[in-house]
Image (tube, rainbow, N blue to C red):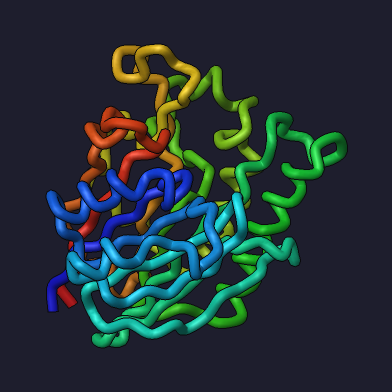
Length: 262
């Protein structure tokens, strides 16, 4: 079975329904994982998605913030939804595809502006969330699994536009990278995007604050696709659709794709 999967922080699925439909029509991934849906589950605009063949959905929703959903053409059933760090936020959902592969969709907390948990509660919540992810992967070792989402960390020097300048900026600080790496290692996860594209600057997010985001190109790779080692060798064709960041009324994130032959 071959299937293509995409992950995208959509920054309001109702507000940006038109560009979700555009992506589904033009790229037709078999599975689309969305983060920051900002919608209760019953308000997600499923009719248009269903009309394009995405009749399966598992989701968790919050009104006006957070929220994660997996849309699929392939039969899928919910397998888990975790509340890491006890935040009570809709930040994780997992669905099991008919071939037995589990897809985990994560929206890791952004962490606020200051990288110091003593003066910034949100940064502490982010580190606690990553710690709980690590502990869960240790306790329930994943297999035949894919992990995607907005992890809100750009771990490598070439995942940001300026490594030296951003080491003191939330999303690229050493302590965040350390926590993310610990979670990745606990689950035996392989970074599929970097397996396929091992070298060079690679971004999936560009700030709304930039007047000309494309020319400035001050991006970060915050959105990831990982897989457990037992299926990582089946992946290929990773790509980031940079041009989507320039669509009408865009999210500040671009979708990330990978294909698996399992």
